[in-house]
Amino acid sequence: MRLQSFVPKRFAAALPVGLIILLGLAPTFVDGVPSAAVGEAPVGLGTAGSFGVLAGAGVTNTGPTIINGDLGTCPTPAITGSPVVLPPGHIHANDAVACRAKLDLTTAFDDAAGRAPTKSYAGPTELGGLTLTPGVYETPTSFAITGTLTLNALGDPQAVFIFQAGSTLITATDSRVMVINGADACNVFWQVGSAATLGVGSTFVGTILALDSIDALTNTTVHGRLLARNAAIRLDSNTVTAAVCATSPTSSTPESTAPDDSTPDDSTPDDSTPDDSTAEPTSAPTTA
Image 1 (spheres, one colour):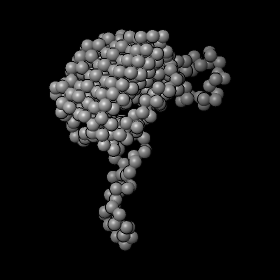
Image 2 (cartoon, rainbow, N blue to C red):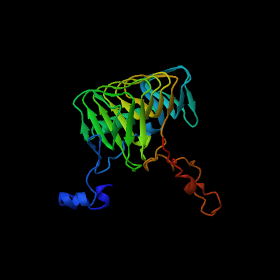
Image 3 (cartoon, rainbow, N blue to C red):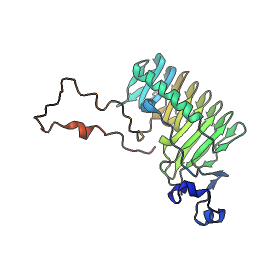
Image 4 (cartoon, rainbow, N blue to C red):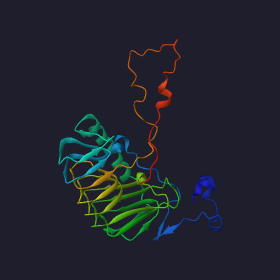
């Protein structure tokens, strides 16, 4: 349970420890890591959120890769190997959409990198075999996943998990990230200081925000996004499904789509008033 649901924040610090325990407000520990007392906000992806795959230096593909979401690259326009982009996704090769999304990716990367850690590790860290609760997990070097990493939202569908790797993220063959108790791929973020490699046959959850390259090896499945700021993304017979997330109310141009000659006809209040009813069909919340 979250502290603010019981007591206003300005009074919480004044409560005696015994009373906090009596009220059930003490933090929960899983694998020695305290769950966050106050929920972390998700990382805002902006227009990069519609992309399943977005690179800075081109995308290469081998085999029958399927992308549920947009595919893009900027400034390098090269996309080779013909990955299948399912509707309503589109391909954006160094166009205005991809380049705007790259700017938003940079903002998201910096946001994720700037979050205060809930748990800091001293060096290279193996996450496989752990069950982690919501929070920000940081290592100055690398994260690895061998076997299964379990993310437990403790019943909170808005729980956020952020992983900050100073250098690399590497997952082993057939490894997997599993989400339980309401955890959602929309709220899992991996900020990677250099490159990310997803092992053969692995199942991965969350959005990777990599400074350099991302390699998704053969038959990797991703519930989230592969977003590489400065380098290429290499795919091989993958399935990438961009999690459909509730968007913040900043949908840029819902009103500017009406043609100019539609100067209001005050005298005709007919049934042609679609604007109010169609302006907000954003996205239905889904869970990966």
